[in-house]
Length: 322
Image (cartoon, rainbow, N blue to C red; front, side, top):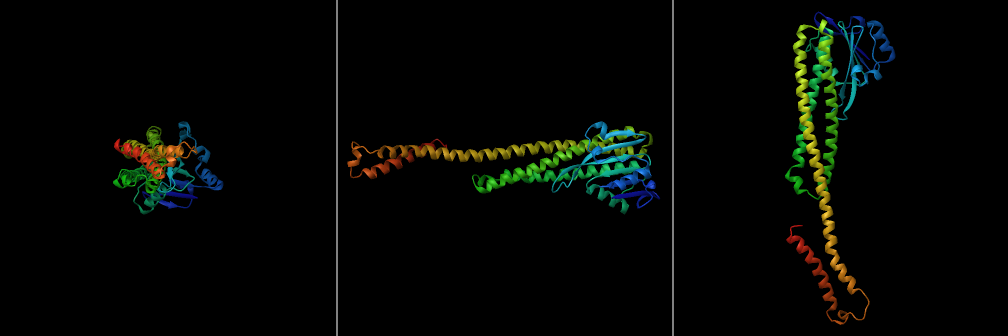
């Protein structure tokens, strides 16, 4: 699908044709025919999906025949199933072309802002910086959501309810759910960090490569964008540390629960040894065992078995082992 915007009286307005007049052309899951149409009308080479997915710095940041070819990963569907998708940018002094192979709320909201007049973009670089600012804002919102989720998890696993549920099915279910949530959050944070790294590379490269035709009013915005990315990197590091702490704590609770089970089994086996030994002795069929002739021999044997089981329990209790 092709979406194009052109500069009309100082504002960006959506157009259908001709594409050579467009200030920004967005290709979303474009067909070969649409890609060829844009390439023919703009005279620019449109990167393929394989080229956009390249991870080398030389592939993600390049300049050819006066055009800048930039790529960066972005997070798709962060609330449900976060995954990383690469976005391609082709920037010249006249226009910006974006190449996408997955939907993105960042682009949808930016287009809505352009249509409503809330976003002002009078040149191609304005468009690119506006998109990068929207990406950084989206990353900030996602990290704030991650922080809220981690706070909820922290309150859950360190609450008194968790201590009261020790050794119960509720504890097992809570710890299992916590591990799943931490895994999903960790996956989201890693995708956000990858996107931040891509944005942090594009901004200084843009300042240098586009310096001859970069509008002066965009220089402060680029500096602010760089500071915002740096602050998000610091916040991301803090969330990673907290995530690792909560993961270690959850695994620690799981180990404690497993140790409690093993302790119960150990106590049961130790307590059961003396009664089994006594029952085994009196279960031997020898005439010389004197207790067989006692009137209270059976009661004596039962009492001895009970006492031999109670004594180890009393010792364990006295030593605070149980």
